[in-house]
Image (cartoon, rainbow, N blue to C red):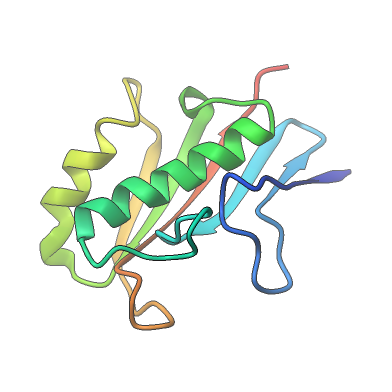
Length: 127
């Protein structure tokens, strides 16, 4: 069984995907989030602000599924410029406490030419 997650506190899906899916085992797979502000539809040009918005969007999807950031067990992050990694890490560290989730961070080309970061996550929701 899989149950879709939908919230207006994160950007709506713009293609054939869900904001998140919860499985029978209470695993939540949150789709990749760019820094689109769900209220304005805008993306800030500032990298640090983009990381914060991405993580706020992920947080909104997790909370809509009944979870919290402490439930996250795996994160994938995609950066258009790996030179921004120290700033990414600085912001990221404010959202996760020990034990931090497993994480992969890679350089990527993101669609649209505006987004500098995209983040997806897997959370193990508490019963």
